[in-house]
Image (cartoon, rainbow, N blue to C red; front, side, top):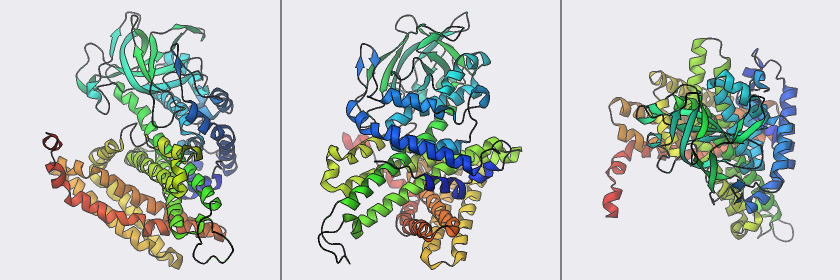
Length: 593
């Protein structure tokens, strides 16, 4: 069973992550609290009643390939069409294309609930939404007129085709080819692997966004172009024409997300797949990054969604399962394991990590929205840099937490967690891909350290750290004894972050790139934990007008996270400052010889 935490989601949006900033703007003036609550309630209902019951079914059924066609699990097609009939595919799209023009924050909240319902289901529409934004920003008016409206409605779905057998994280090695034709089209040749929803039976057409090289393209990523390649060609009247020269050659057998078809796609076996250029020649990576940046936040939300589902699953089991006698219990018989201190520790850790993931993802969405409504260049620059800074954190930490929370869920189930029948193992199997795809979390760490810390000459990250300290100071000034050591722990972690940031900026300035890269992953976790503790504390401060139970719960979460998990920051700082020499001295090739 899954029950959407609508109240907690709404509170986080409104009181922690700044939805009110958007509601005050002319662009979103009609987005009142009543409308926000109505959208969240209905999204939660759909996730719980329509999507969640199909999750275990899809896990067992998978996506078989037969006669060149992929079949989705039972109930999948019906659920998808109910989803698009509800208008969920068009939440953030431009109203001129048939969209609702809502902020990314609302899409992030809905996406969390759909991923809790089923990560395998939600990932397909997520890629379509990314394709929509790429087309809105980069496609010609002719392509928009022919394809955009049906993508926005969800009548057609979109994919993202980057990866090739020899080109994973490093797209310099990309070999797919594109050839110009006199009629303005291109012919696409090559193979792409790990293509999510590359083929399926949910929609009549699939619009592939494909990276490929032109014959005269410069080497490296500067020579990559982006092409729109439909599964079926589209006639001038909008009807479907003949099948394009693109086919699915295989479906991967994966550890998790079995309901999501992960395909090997082959282009051009019969003369070339017909494609159309999106954006400019040799500028395709910039266009694709529109999709990838959206996808990175969306993958962070996948980690969040699975964490919430795993927590609810484990909590229900802990309340039902009885073993031993908990300290202080005086009744007859055994106690529910939820009363035992070690189970409490794990449940509290699961819930705190989940709320941290939620707050970080929504904060990133808020920065993206603010960058779109900023009225002057200074504001646009600030919020664009804030979104850039938060995106790798919002992708990496929530996905790491998704794995950690799902693993704790299995531990709480004990031996039954290792048995597939209980469903606890599926959460971990599903969650495990999220730290890997859309740029591994190691890649996110490198991006954060090498590209995002130097923004505005390092001044943006310094201002960000000052904002974190201001919240810690507010906690200290509140003089609330229930906060315990929260303020001190926050300040200590912020100092750790400040010192580690100084090290990273100095290492780059001095050309010690290896030192910076060796500490990149612990740096991202240090930054994420510190931000997460601050956001939990901000929520506790903001809940002072709420009923005592919610006030106590939010304060307890902030305090427990700061007094336990944030203790990692000192060790992470040590990893960054002290371990670079040993890491760089390690020679795996020599060890293996």
